[in-house]
Length: 127
Image (cartoon, rainbow, N blue to C red; front, side, top):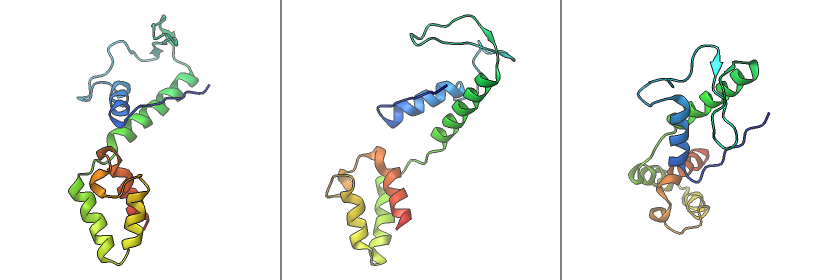
């Protein structure tokens, strides 16, 4: 079995992860009971409850891991990114800083979309 999920943006992924994990406040899906899962078809319609199998447990484990990863992703502010890149600049890595900024198709840090700040910080951490 292969599951492929495509998201348009980070917020859509977070919303999906939250739905997979249940209510963000920790409320579990009321339709789910021990040993039983609800199966949805590609059209999104729910079918009858079926006994939980090893395969469904594996899928649930993957979904839980995806939800955890989405919730743990760090959100950065422009000030934090600017400080990190400023520190690299002061350390004599001006060319590397420019390369990071230009890798996003822009010429200024302020033109990088907020949703890409985590990527900027990851690249800065590699320098």
